[in-house]
Length: 307
Image 1 (cartoon, rainbow, N blue to C red):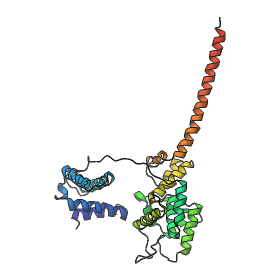
Image 2: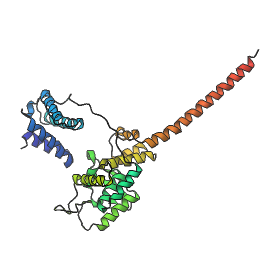
Image 3: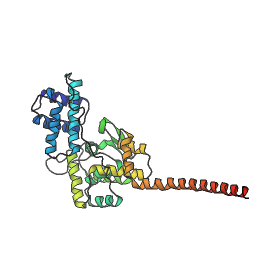
Image 4: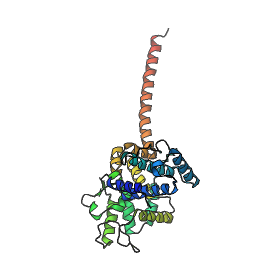
């Protein structure tokens, strides 16, 4: 049962327009924390937080998961202090774990071909094509509505994406064809774009987890290691390799910071390789020109100073 502090915190998150997915994740983490806790929330110390981290480590939670817990708990205590007026010091302020920073993983062109060869269901093909060609997040795909698509402009309106931001993305020919094929088959007049096709939830919008289960199914079928987010990474990498500007990719992906988009430069080997050879050719031409000029000067000096 939630404490009064958690009830108020949930209300605060909803008032701030956090997505239902985020609110659920935050409250699950806080529920785990409060179930473990043996002291009132307003009396939690840094020692309690350290002991909780030890508990998570004993359960073999990854550093990323533990850091996610710490960040969520810190935000909760910020809420208590700044919005509830509780007189305490945030116990999570200086506690952190050292995290590895893995590069985003993307699919190679032949892997994309292999994956989509096994996706024959029209709904699934349209969903995953939007991630690959338009860079949509799985949460954004789950929330799409039929009227978000503008076929004559070949664009898609993403409402209330990550961080509560709206943006417009564009439809490639294959993505638009996949969408049209799916909608032509779909008989429902529901507002949601992608609907559950089997079971008691038939006709309801497919959930984030439902979409993730579908990509897991196709990953097994194609024998590829692939996730929904990798399709988004693949789109960004492909655009960068095709010499699209970073600011363009940033806008399409809905990144708040250009530094997030710049991470794709580190995995886009084709562009890095192409830029290197182009630049080093200029460097070598300049170096050769300078050496030729110096050689001519040396020859001239020798001739003038010959005894």
